[in-house]
Length: 197
Image (cartoon, rainbow, N blue to C red):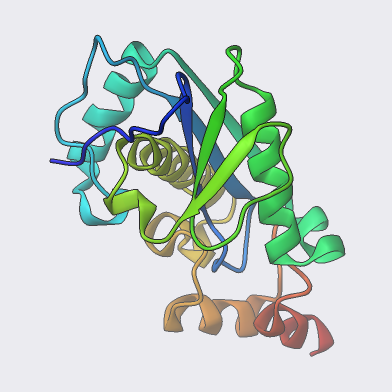
């Protein structure tokens, strides 16, 4: 079981994670979560290693039991303007800013932190090591997956519900045949090539 993070002098710790750096379409979605020690959530893990059914069940528990949670995002046009790394940092800042309780420590999944007004620490593989980051990864993934399912209803020929916007062989074939939607990231090479054609 992943344990909540303990840090000297930090009373309220938020975990932050992102989903959607690799896809060719849609926003990069981030989440920030402050867990309630009085209401522990059993079964937290890296969202990618959980079944969809388990993720959805944990999503509801996190929303109901966390002291505070917030989503952040950067849209495709922001990704194209800033690049994916800087857009991800912006989305993380937005997630932390959206918390209704200010944490005194923020733990970020990965190897770098966005600029924040409180202490922060990057934790490599944090989504499988730190409960707060795991919770954030679940909120972000469920949210983005739902958005891809909704987008699939408007553009069923691209198969977004199946590949969630990632550059699978099917997605690349559809992109080459049909061109890009307004939701595609124009700065990503496969999309740029489709637009040039």
